[in-house]
Length: 353
Image 1: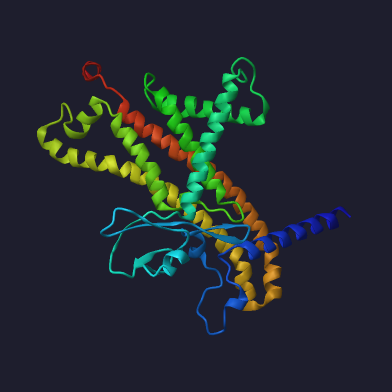
Image 2 (image 1 turned 30 degrees about the horizontal axis):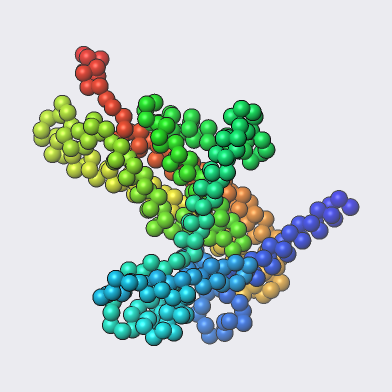
């Protein structure tokens, strides 16, 4: 009886996931939309992970505004959707969510709202809202005069103390680390949100977009260089106690290193989150591929193996999402700490002697 009950529950879970994926996943192309002579793929993998000019919620596509600057005008042209921009007669739609001018005036800048940007804003909003809410509780005494109340405040305090003591304090000089704690905490929490949003049925992983990760890495780059010590800049451009000929070789390498560090931050986060999203879509999409080539019965049979594997990958992706947020925050603290650190050359020379 117990075995039959477990089998029934497993079957219900598989059917539920199949219905959820097939009904609401825009990456799936329905059989009715294809004909036998079409070369369209069964699963549009890149269509799922790329940025869009609409937001998918509960299976419905909500158009997002288009904000476009054209040549010869300082005032942007604003439309409620891509369809509205095309209907105006001033633009033609290109593959993806791009537009081209139909009036001869080139598009200078496209500031349109996209799905990745919406989820980026949502992560930032949640981070700010949680921080303000928790700060209000601490001002009232909860967690300061008494113990933290509730699991959420305990989790918040645990996360904040971890960022402060194990990341900031460990990697940034003791006299300077406190002013970087808010930034490192905000980076960790917001990236965690963006990574985990991709696990939702209609969610989007904003960090699977290189522009998002590049902006985040850019903030770290600016903070690192702005707070660089005199010793940091001497080691970039002058190299004390180094022969002049060696400076000619080392200085270009150090200048290049200033930019390769944030570049590595951006690419690492982007590549890990994009590959995880693609892997889940491809593996779950095997059900539809098998159904397309071998029949519906074979596809349903394969779901007993594919769906549990996908569930395991979802758990792994949630762990990787938190891990990548930690790695980004840790490396940001390391880069800031290396730039902010002061070295005593006289003591170093005496110790060497």
